[in-house]
Image (cartoon, rainbow, N blue to C red):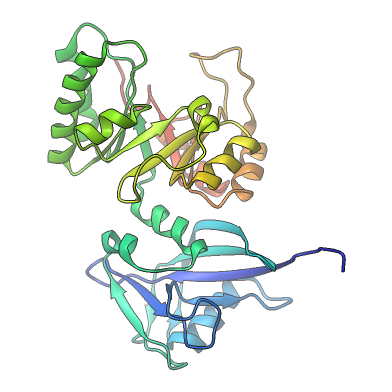
Length: 317
C-alpha cells in the first residue's frame, strides 16, 4: 500500500422554494453517514462536466430538471480513507416537484434552521456560505467623536450592510463595552449580524453574534472558543492560518491582502491567482480583503470567494 487517498469529485445543488427554504435529502440506511441530511447531488463521472453531473444526479435522485446554476462554494474534505472535493451550486431554476426517487426522505428547511440539523461534515461550510452575505464591513478604529462614528455605522446599515465587525485595538475596555452595546442595538434593528474583534469575553457578556480573531490569536488557540450558535471568524494570510482555522472550527475567514492597500503599503499583495489557489485548498467560506471595492465582488466570487471585506469601502469619512 502506498498510502494514497483517492480524491472524488462530488457536486451538490441548493434548490430554493418561493419561501426561501432550501431542499435537503436524507441519506438512506446502509449508506455512508446514513440518517444525516445533505444537499442533494452525487459523484461526477469520468468525462462529465460538473453541470452535466448535477443535472443527471438531481434528475435521478429527486426527479427535477434544472436550468441555470451558479457556484456557491467548493469544499475540499479529507475522510479517513478518502478525500473529496464537493462543488456546491445554487440552482437558479428547475422544473418538477422534488421527491425521493431512491426511497430517501426529502424536506424543505429554513436556512436559519440548518445549524440544528445533523449533516455530514462537508455540508457544514455550505450552511455557513448560505447564511453569509456577499459583503463584510469592518469598522475603522473609533475616534473621540463617538456620535460621528455611530452615524457612519447607521449609514452603512442603511446602505445594506448585514455583516459587520466592530474593530478596535486602542480604546479602553469600559468604553468599548458601552460602544459595542450601542452598535449591537443598531445592528439588531437593521437585521444585521455583529462580530467584535478579538474579545471573546465581551461577546459572551453582552450577547454579541460572534467574534473575529486576529491571525495571531487564531494561531494560539487549540479549540473553538465559542459555541456553534455564535459566529467565529478569523484573519488569514496563508496556508498555515487557513489550516488552523479549519482545525479549530472557524466559520469563515478573511484572506488578503489581495491588492495593495494604503493602510499597509509595506505588505505585499497576493493577487487573484494566489488568492484562488488558497480558496481552493480550504473548505471555509472566504472573504477577499485588501484594496477592494464592491465592484470587485463578482471578480472575487469568480476566484472562489464568498465576497469582499473591507473598511474604507463601507465607511467613507
